[in-house]
Length: 378
Ligand SMILES: NC(=O)c1ccc[n+]([C@@H]2O[C@H](COP(=O)([O-])OP(=O)(O)OC[C@H]3O[C@@H](n4cnc5c(N)ncnc54)[C@H](O)[C@@H]3O)[C@@H](O)[C@H]2O)c1
Ligand SMILES: [Zn+2]
Image (cartoon, rainbow, N blue to C red; front, top):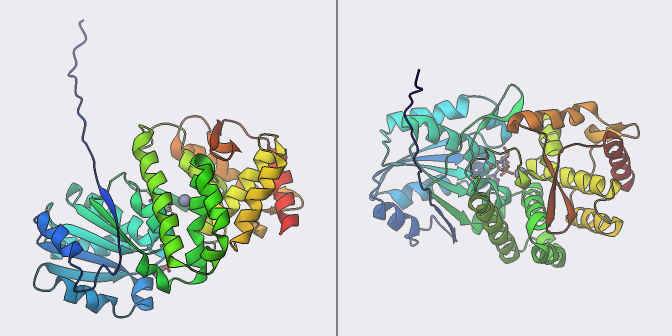
C-alpha cells in the first residue's frame, strides 16, 4: 500500500536585544517605560528576587513609583537563590500572579534577580498561556553575563539540575551594573568564571584582558566589570545563534565547558557552592585533565589555574575527591551529563586558548591524577 503522510515544516524567527543601562528604575530614566509603551503593554507582573529586595530595601517602592500612572503593575517577591528552583512554590506563585493580574499574551512578566530566580520565573512565563512575553533584568554578574542573556529556563527535579525547563527566548534583557553594588564578594566573583570559560573557548584576547584586569575586578571596579559582562554576554549570545543549534538538539554543548563536574558538585554540596564557584573548579579540573592527557601544555595549564586562583576562586573542594582520586559521585556526573543531552558522551576540552575540542571518552585515571594535583595546589 502506498505510504501516505502529511509534510509539515515551519520556522519561527526569534530576536531580542540585550541592553546595557544604568539606574533603570530612577523615575527620570524613561527607557523601560518607553520600551513597554512602544510594545503596547499595559499590564505587568513583576517578580523580584527576595535576596535582592533584602539588599536593596527601597527597590520595591522605586519600582511601584516607576510604573505608577503608566502601567498596571503587580509585584511579588520570591525566595532568592537556588532554593527557588528546588520546589514548585516559586513557579506556582508566578502562575498565580499571571492569573490574578490577567496577564495575557500581550502583557509582560518582568523578572528581576539572580540566575536562579530568572530561571524559575522564565519557566513560569513560558508555560503560562503557553508562553507570555517576558523581560529579564538580571542582577548578579553571572545572570548578566551568561544565564540571563540565553534562551533556557528551568527548575531542578529528582535532585537533578534543570531537569524541568524549556527553551524560551526572552523578549528583552536589560543589564544594569548598578544592581551589582550590593552583591556580596562571593556573588560578585562567581560569574567571572563564565567569562574565563568563554574566553578559553573562543577569545584569546579576552582571556588576556581578564588576566590584565584581575586587580580591578578584585577591587570591585564597576566599569571594568561592566566591560567583562558586555564581552562575555556578547560571546554567549553570538554562540547561541551562530552555531545553528540554539535549542541544543545536538550532543555537543561547548558552552558547558567545565560544567559536567560543576553541576554535580553543586548538587553534592547541597548548593552551598555557587554555580560560578563550581564552574571555576570544573574549569580548573578539565584544564588539568587536558594537561594530564597531553592535550594542553603544562605552561598553559598552570597559567589558567593561576588566573582562576588569582581572582579568589578555590580550585579544589573536598567533595571533588581526595588523594585516592575522584569522588565516584562526581564521576557519575559524566553519565548524567550524557543523559541530559542524549546521544554520545561529549565533553568539551581545550587544546589552546580559543581552541575547543570535543572528546567522547575519558581516562578516569587522568581525572584521578588531576584531582590530586588540584588538591596539592590548594
Ligand atoms: N538558564 C541558563 O542558561 C543558565 C546558565 C547558567 C546558570 N544558570 C543558573 O543560574 C543560577 C545561578 O545564578 P546566580 O549566580 O545569579 O546566583 P543566584 O540566583 O543564586 O543569586 C545569588 C544570591 O544573590 C542574591 N542577589 C541577587 N541579586 C542581588 C543583588 N543585586 N544584590 C544582592 N544580592 C543579590 C540572590 O537572592 C541569591 O541569594 C543557577 O541556578 C544556575 O543553574 C542558568
Ligand atoms: Zn554556567
